[in-house]
Amino acid sequence: MPSLEKDLKKAILALPTSRKDRLLFQLLTPNPLLQEQLKFELLEGEDALENRRAALATLILQQTDGFYYNALDLLIALRQLCPQLAHHTKVTGDLYGEVQLLLLLLKSTLAHQRDLLQELNGKNEALAQFLAKRAEEALQKLQKLHEDLHVEFSDDLTQVLP
Image 1 (cartoon, rainbow, N blue to C red):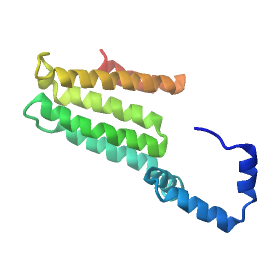
Image 2 (cartoon, rainbow, N blue to C red):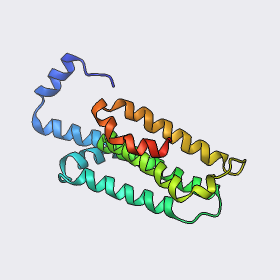
Image 3 (cartoon, rainbow, N blue to C red):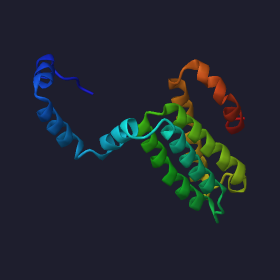
C-alpha cells in the first residue's frame, strides 16, 4: 500500500476537523470492507473475535457433518465456506483464527465424509485436490504465525496430515 507524501500528510493534518470528517465519510462510503473493518474495531465488543470464530466454526461443522450424495455436492458446500473464512480474516486480521478454522474444516471433513474419499477416482478427485490445497494453505499461513503458536496446532496437523 503506497504511503502518503510528507507534504500531503502535513496538509491533511492541518485541515479543520469538520473537513477531515467529511473526507473520511466520503472515503468510507464506497468501501464496504473498510466500513466493516471499522465497525469491528470500533463498535464490536471484546468478545467479537471469539464470537465470529465460533459462528464460522459452527457453520463449518454443519456443512461438513451433513449428508451428501456425492463428492461434488460436498465440494460445492466447502467452496462456499472458503470466501467466508477469507472475509473473516480481511475484516478482523485474525490469521490465527483462519488457520484454526481451516484445520477444523479439514479435520471435520476427513472425519465425517471419509466414505467419499476412500478411493481416489474421477468423481472425487476434485474434492481431494481441494482438500490438499486447503491443507497447503493452512501450512503456509501457519508459517506466518510466531513459532510458539505452532505447538498449539500440532495435534490438529497430525490428524489432518498423518
